Image 1 (cartoon, rainbow, N blue to C red):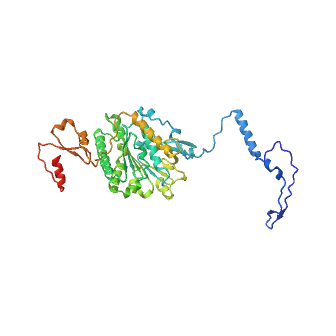
Image 2: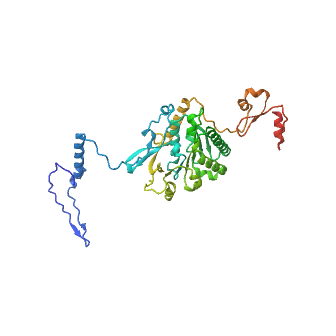
Image 3: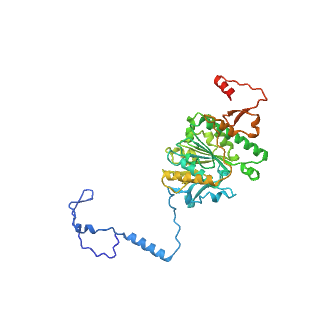
Length: 426
């Protein structure tokens, strides 16, 4: 009923005539048109229940009593920025010596009535596999995770390789000083070179650990004069690997990294749209598995196991298997709504980091240009050995100086006469 403490008892009578149907329902025969003269003055009145609630609230606030804990926390927001949870100023982290934990999102734990930042230590969580339908935040997950890594570690401590086989979701990260190189599915030669580099890196690190009698890279780096940097291999849209010409070699290298990389300080962060896009044997080497919204809901159980948690149709909402399955919202790097402003902010932070950092940077994959000029060759020459060298050009694999000396016999074999002629000219 409406709450009208000042109202005067009305003498109005309802003159509507009703017919009673066979089923007992009333049906109006005429219309009660009384009161139309005052229809313009009508206003919505609070109910008596609203009035009681407001009065109780007023009395409670006037007594300054502590608020009783609510039985349930509110649902997670659909958009949570990293700056709402933690300090995002990289200068506050780069000078610290402690080992950081990296932010993935904001988790909801109903059984504990808690909502907390979801952070991970890669030494504990190992490789991360994210499965989700297109448009539900997989690229955003990688962007946020890597930007947090770059905010909390220097380019000397973390090197990042970006394999972008999706819709160019990682290209905005290229300018950060931590990024060694960026690859797409069309960069066949460049990808193959990177795979050979990563396989060589695995062998070098295994040999170093064996010589130092260390069980893992964290233990080795504590005592090493020159510690190894952590390598983060980000693969966005693993689905695109199957159609690439380097598919077999890529799967072989990823299998090696997934099996041995975590103990060597090499971590995979991989996303895919379909559960069967990656071999089950390879998936078994990913210690941490995350599922975002999937059109095929039956795959959720295959990824994180049986759970009572419901995966909502919300961009960035996911489930992560820890001791239990927790629901969380993927964070975005900045508190901005539109995509263009977000990209501009990413570029601005990358530029600020690059100007601030004066130390060594990770080396990109060397690629031989289509045209090699004498100036390019001269720039690579070791001046201490220049006097006895005849320069030919640059090698294809490492883009280093190709040269020979005249103190040994030379044999030139070619099926192209023009190549031989060009050699003599050089």
